[in-house]
Length: 255
Image (cartoon, rainbow, N blue to C red; front, side, top):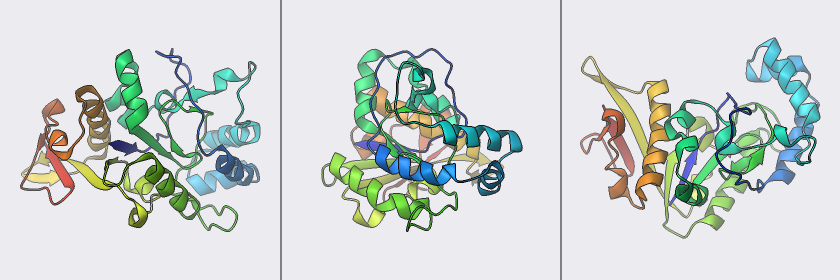
């Protein structure tokens, strides 16, 4: 089984790390190509592209100029394993900091993080701070956007890492999962959805759904889940599987 999740806009490069595990991203060559394009963008360009404040535009302009993709003693503090670097709702649900040491290898084997800059990350891949959503409308070489750039690369990478028919659990947002060419995937795809029952109606509430995706990752790791039936047992923080609302490999959990 493999699991894919989205990255987060917010980052944490200060909290003490619980492990020294680290690895190198697989697509540094491609990331450097993207960064060369980013380096040509002014702070104003970045603000317009990503709809971010002047302060964030200035910060990320400087990051783009300074990014080296190469660790050394002088800048090691600017690198951090991806699963600890990202600090959004999904990662709060996952809470990788509290995983026991014996579960870190399982996390490393199962989890993959989609990224606008790095394409596909393993959890302990060391990354530098960046801001680049997958949906950013930026041409890279002959590719008109990041989706066109990453689609064949990411799908091919997942196929190489998985056996035919192996389960791929999609816990990423639509924006990020769209960077995977589903037509060429050899995996058996399953997508959990998390909904809230409010005033008699089922609703997807972004904050809760994101956190639930992270909690599902944690549930899979903690319980050594390997199949769809195991996924259906997810019952954290009041969620329960709904056979009635689920269809094919779209699993709906309600609370």
